[in-house]
Image (cartoon, rainbow, N blue to C red; front, side, top):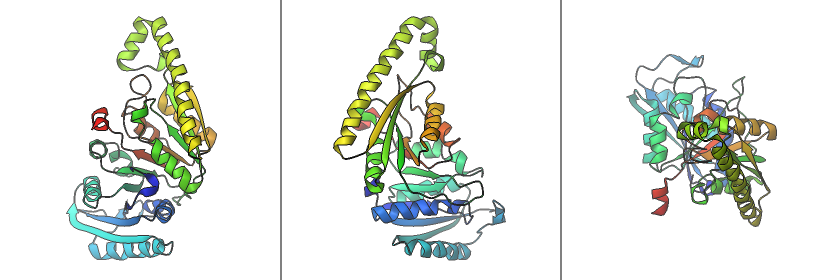
Length: 311
């Protein structure tokens, strides 16, 4: 989502289940505020099961069209411009088809529910989603239904933004600021610096071989992170945003999750991949680790590579 408040086209895949409909409050809230066009999408699966999540599954184009139009009518009552599209070629890969449609329709944002089905929670962080994000396509808003399958409200008051620590590599910051303006929400920035015990890869080896040196490097990184967040706070305050910040030490994913719970965060906005901390704060594994344990909306912003940023 290049500019959150300026998104003009949202894609909302629906499978006909109440679980998938958990995205609708978020869709209505975002689309009405940003004056975005919404495309509701249903993909008719090849050899589709008769039921999904304990409910009757949409197995043909006619019933899928009727269903989408019913959903669209509710969104239109909120003043949202809605189009409906049923893809009835009989797809084996729903995930692949969703991302192809997003590219074809030039959508800014995909809004989807995650649940226990083999697809949605799993494929979002598989090769298809990662390749789509890496190629500069769409950002993804994940919405998590309540345990009773009801749809959560989408009334943003507190937005948590895990940062990378590199000014030219903070794709989540601008969308978060735009959302804060749109919803009159507060932003809390966090930057997680590893401890000696939570280093991974080559850094873990260096920590074992040169623990004193690595500990000093990490301590310097913590001070640098504090100074960096002060700069970002100044930027946010200059734009009229109520913003706070803190530096944490440890493993990024659990620290972000703990902070989200402590602050009762309404939304996490973060890069889908990138380079963080001393080399991998927001490495590819962090986003799925957070999503896998989230109960709150998560907005994943595509992170440009350094080469793309230079162009």
